[in-house]
Image (cartoon, rainbow, N blue to C red; front, top):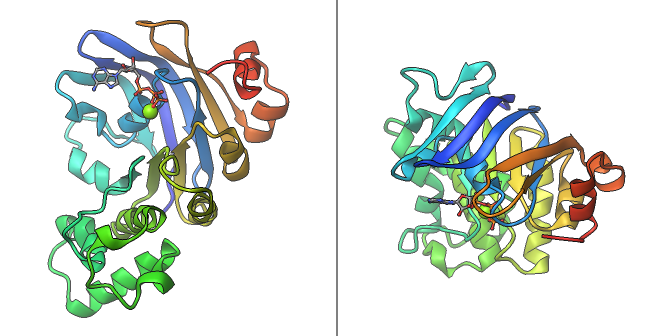
Length: 259
Ligand SMILES: Nc1ncnc2c1ncn2[C@@H]1O[C@H](COP(=O)(O)OP(=O)(O)OP(=O)(O)O)[C@@H](O)[C@H]1O
Ligand SMILES: [Mg+2]
């Protein structure tokens, strides 16, 4: 079930270093939101606060709130492991478990989270997740083969299938196409457009055309200089960010003048 993300006054630290300052943003359910901005402005850092992956780094912490349908993910007693099953993440480099079969890769996250699953239930989950990731037809005859035997684009869709299998509310993707060729990139972009019918999708990208193609809203982050915190500068419908931005820095960035 797709959920709304509502971030209030979020500061994100690595130890004493304030990496991202005072983010306020509301992300609609059943939509795709793109995060853009120059390298080092904190896109990945901020993205990882949305499923409590940030705090995995020693000394990393946040101040502020991240509400998922009104529940603060950083509230007292909230289990980060449960948060990560509600808010799934797909990384830049496809990272299937190399020695595991395609089938077991799909089931890897779901098995960690749930009780015993019958063989039939597992089969069904494998098929529905691979179909959801637009990969079923390509792999249905070799489910027992290792995930590492797939092409890069197929591996990324396998990772998306693994994420879907957990039945999350939100899917976060950090530059999911940057290691892919153009054809695989389009396949993953098509998939992202389909995923928004069921999930809240947030994607970090350096590819302006990609942001324009897949997202409804775009958030532009920027940084004033090395050692300074990244900030959310402008957040608006994607069309507006690209055609009629309010902020000068946004305009310079989307028109390729820096970053
Ligand atoms: N594990 C870490 N420990 C300490 N500082 C970090 C860590 N990861 C990132 N940072 C710092 O936080 C800031 C934001 O980095 P982040 O990786 O979020 O940027 P980004 O916008 O995703 O950049 P890119 O577009 O290059 O991926 C940078 O100054 C970076 O050096
Ligand atoms: Mg990054």
